[in-house]
Structures are given as structure tokens and as C-alpha cells.
Image (cartoon, rainbow, N blue to C red; front, top):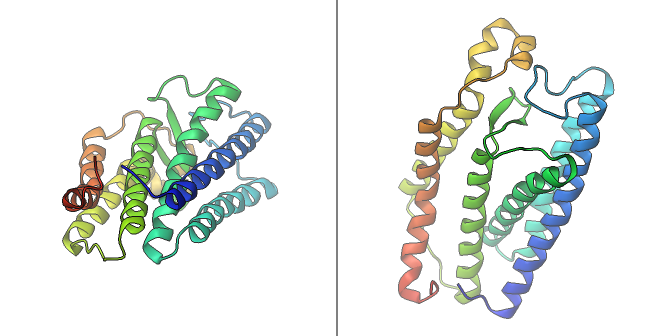
Length: 230
């Protein structure tokens, strides 16, 4: 896929920013895990939330999302390209976060190591490979959106049916990540913090991934006659 020079520069700057941010994120998480003796995250209560530490960590996670959204807002010129560049930044950041954690702490040992992905509203658990796959989808979608916008001002309208399927995929992926926490929620919040998953619902996740990829496939197919994909 070819981008005009200006679009290539914006794409590259967003990627460079996300890679730099990934190092900062990986270093921060490394420091935090060493402090709370959770260098290997597959432990009960993966982030002790006592005192101010828990509040600081939750705000840090929110600040990370704000930064990713901000770079997308600065790079894009329309709401669609802003979301596209945000998706690129998020995907690159997420992948390089794991790359840099491997460099810093020699974790993860493999793409199938369990990681706690998020803490709200319940702990999200999944093998490292799962969020990496979603990150790759985000990069592809964002790149297609930015390439389409840079080539023509004509609108590329995507069927709402495909987007509904994609959102169904998002819901299924969230279920796959939080299934164990949901089963433990009846026992209270403390139980959800201490639950350790033993099996990941790969079939549910793969269906979710396929549904999330539907709008991307539709967009790529509709762009083919315009010779944007070579």
C-alpha cells in the first residue's frame, strides 16, 4: 500500500511516538511489579490495590488512553482518520509494550503466557497472543483508513451491519477475557481479584476476532478497484 509523502510522515510519526510510549509503559509496569512482587503476573491479586498505589495505577492507565487518543487527534484531519491514527498508535504501543517487557525482564516467556490486561470493571485475563492479535487488527484498520483518506476525499461508507458484527466481536472478546472473573463475581470483589484462570476460551476468542475483522475485510475489498492495495 502506497501513501503520499505527507500521510507516510504522519503514519511514521504516530508509530515512533507509540514505540517510545511503549518503552515508558513497560518500564513503569516493570517498576510496579518489582515493588509489589508480581514480576510474573500470573498470581492471585496481580496488583495489590491497598493505599494510594492502586489509585495511582488506575489513573496511569487512564492517562495512557488519553495520550493515545491525543496523538490520534493531532495526526488526523477528520473524525475517521483521527480514530484511525489512534488505532494505529494503540496497536503499535500494545505490541511493543510486550516486546520491551521481554527486553527488560525476560517476560513473557512465550506468547501463551497469561497476563492481566486490565483491572476495570473486573480483571481481564488472557494469553499475551490474544491482545497482540487485536492490536494487529487495529493497526491494519487504522492504516487502511489513513490510506483511503490520503488518496481521495470521497467517502467510503461501510455497512452498519458489518459494524454491528464487529461490536458483537468486541463483546465476545471481553467475555473471553473476563469469563473467570464473571464466574467469581458472586463471591465478591476480593474473589475476583484472586481468581487465576486455567483455560482460555480460544474458540470464543477466534470467533470474536473474525467478527472484529469483518469491517476491515469489507474496507480492503472496496478499496481494491481504486488500486490502493498493490
